[in-house]
Length: 173
Ligand SMILES: [Zn+2]
Image (cartoon, rainbow, N blue to C red; front, side):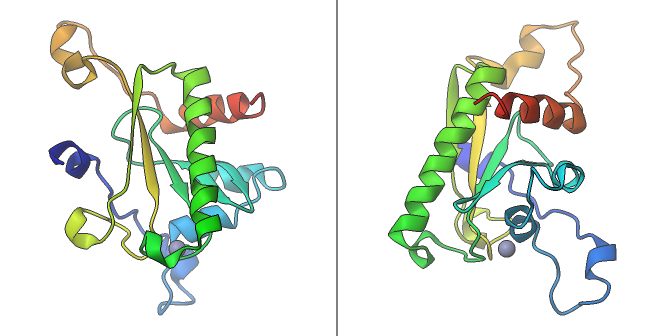
């Protein structure tokens, strides 16, 4: 429970440009991800960090990752709970989780995954209005990697490079 709580679920900074003309309806980055056609508009997809989008929902990089390769799976529907989704929509999310796992396996080759949800503000959801699923790749001992390799400075992979790499890998799945 403590670990799941620490999987940060931050509120993403609002894009003032896109919300300037509609202050009553601030942009939801998860809705935007679901509306992003990765093939037709790769530049927008990169800006929004969307790796895959289809009728089932979207798979995107978390802009504030717990670790490199931290992915989010989101349904199209702007709803806060699993009970607001149909059985088919829930099944679609499970398929996108599998896709995300396949993508991370072919790139980061992790030894395990944490797959989880923070449903509701009290549970740590940063975007309680639009439920989503976290996929975090894990390695044995990764939590104390810094102390294990004392003397080696760990530089997190820039998110743009991560996106580029995963996007290319996605095309081969
Ligand atoms: Zn939304």
